[in-house]
Amino acid sequence: MPPTRRRLIALLALAAVVAAGLVVHVVLPSSAATDIAGDALYTVAVYAGVVVILPRLRPLVVGLIAGGWSVAVELFQATGIPAEWAERFRPVALVLGTGFDVRDLVVYVCAALAVVGVDAAVGRSQRRRA
View 1 (cartoon, rainbow, N blue to C red):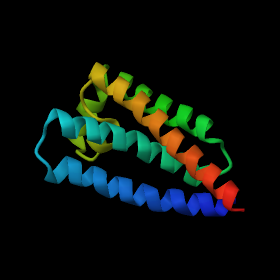
View 2 (view 1 turned 90 degrees about the vertical axis):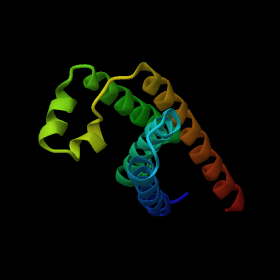
View 3 (view 1 turned 45 degrees about the horizontal axis):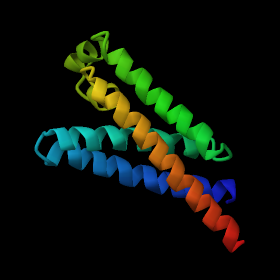
């Protein structure tokens, strides 16, 4: 897929994922399911953001970056610093979270693997059409 087209698709996906994440965070009642959905959407948003910036990267590389970023942010939460920052400026919580949860690490890895699979499949489909 041409980089410009991949970038546009990623930008549209990013907008949709951020909107879905805000719905999960603001509208739906807090539960284990919404926490897992929010974590998965976070990793997918990071993935899409990386593709917007670097559309030539292969899906596996983007997945490693998105998954690694998500895991790093979760581990940063264990320090308590993001929670302190979020107390002063609430939107920080949307980007860095506030509390460490081991389950989130599993969700991030699974979401990264899933989005890599989807991106690779779309790429294969596009190559077959060409």
